[in-house]
Image 1 (cartoon, rainbow, N blue to C red):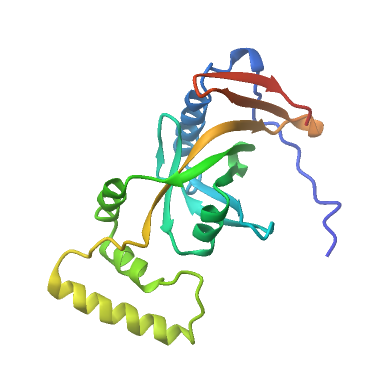
Image 2 (image 1 turned 60 degrees about the vertical axis):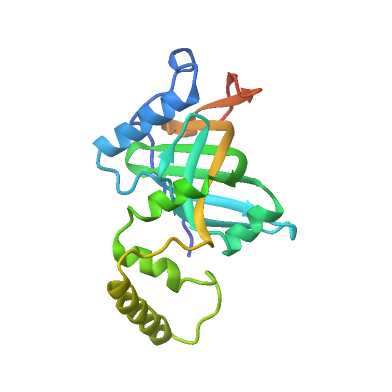
Amino acid sequence: MDFTDQRLSYEKGVLDQQSVPESPFDLLKAWMDEAIAQKVQEPYAMSLATCGIDNKPSVRIVLMREITETGVVFYTNYESAKGQDIAENPNAEVLFFWHELERQIRISGSIAKIDAQKSAAYFQKRPHDSQVGAWVSQPQSGEVTNREVMDQTFEQLQSDYSNSGEVPTPEFWGGYEITVEQIEFWQGRANRMHDRIVYTSENGDSWNTKRLLP
């Protein structure tokens, strides 16, 4: 299949270096608010790239669940392939792409587990079936004989926890925060002359901005 003739002209917006806020978090929140207002489907979905000691990068979609004062938070199984990568190399990058707005955001930085109590509080807010599903996916990414095994385990756990009440938070499950060290905002423009503004942290207290060639 050849896609060399498939082209789009991006003409929905501009990104002016002189008008961006001092903090990248202000721009991140503003763009996220706009994506939600424009009804972008799951605008908080982001591609997470990690790399363990084998030097082989892995990427998958996860859901951002919070923008903090220092970074972004998502939740997952700590014993998953991504969890193993993070344990071996605590650096990561995420990418948001919103085709409807012709925008991308890249965030890179160090990554670490969040407080266990905060993870537990979020877990208890999840739908009951999602809580049960977290227990089924253990170990996440592990091999399973067939779909029926998964379904049977799910049904058994649903029955067990319907009798006992609250689904306990698994010790192997919780949140990570990526502390932002660099964040790039990309606005598509016509003729491949895209706007790219990158913020780089200075000791976590202030930010430098610069324009990159497209």
